[in-house]
Image 1 (cartoon, one colour):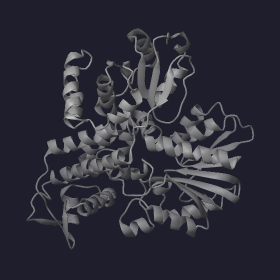
Image 2 (cartoon, helix red, strand yellow):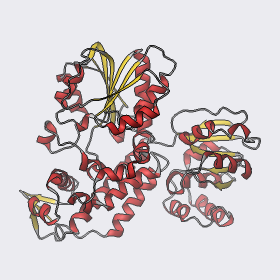
Image 3 (tube, helix red, strand yellow):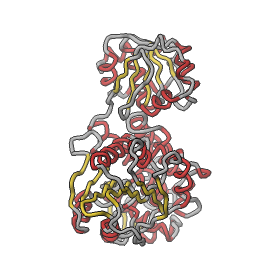
Image 4 (tube, one colour):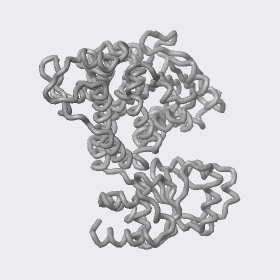
Length: 490
């Protein structure tokens, strides 16, 4: 964006009562507002009164600035409001356009009050996310693709820096690693930080990550300290990562979840607080749902799983480690018209089975059961056309043994669909790692939490399965996230 446009927008913000008191817009302008371009292209030369249903931290600022630059006006809505209230605001505000996530559009579409809402003023609906529909006549529906390879790459780098900064801040708070002239052994660091024995492996991986990225220097079995990191600098790093995430790659509550974990690291590493309670506060699954169901990469990969199941025409389907049902929901919904399906939803935890039984009560062909990927041989060998393992095999003690166990459950020619991260996810090292099973395979020897893409290909081959497809490809905007769907055939 050029200097003239930025000057024009600063004046427009001061003139617009709806946005004058929003510091997020000024911060976006100070950074050059690089995300405005796709929205200007989408809006074209038609000024709109635009109801914006995104948080202003992140994509919401881009949308507001593009609306003002195109000569329109803005109405700010609450993306977390009840759909009925949002529909009432849409009608009352006289908005000629609305901009929102696809998931919210789906909720508005199915809201009972939607048929009674007057959409006469509404001309255009712009949404971000997986393709969806709007069942009411009048407005033109447009999907806006805001993700670029460069944006996702920058987010990955900024998010990594924020997490590494939090790791360092947490360790330095225990009077270690604060002086470049003084070194400490790993054991000295663990003792000073009062790390619970069961979490030693996690914090040792912190030290590896901090060393690999040049934050610390390792000399033999000792780590040299570095200049003390400032808490304000850590907070700023998280702010920058959240702006790149929110609305583009997922909901604000996902970034907030990881940030809460970062802030609670002293209690997590000592064992005074359980990571499970941060992911499932008071037994609720809303954070886990946002993490595993509603992020851009989860939506993309879950949709690809469902498409693959449909293409294979599978009748007997087993899902292991189904958890919150994020992948199941997409696959089961898309199988709703099939009368010949037998879907076995399994997890190690009865908690998830109880929730799933309620969620999928309308599908009589869905069965439920306990299955342990580390120890359990099924009494149904060679019984399944497709097995789905979405984000669960990284928690297996021995990936090779688990793959062999799953292969035995497939019919000849059956397919195993695996979704896995394939790089070190440092945000997992400050959150779910505190509740994960310790690996006993190549990850133990390499000191990593996740297998690389090549290691998964080799493990699948050792299990006697053949790789059919790996997606996304290296040019896809989401490829910097390094999460992949592996499709393997028996």
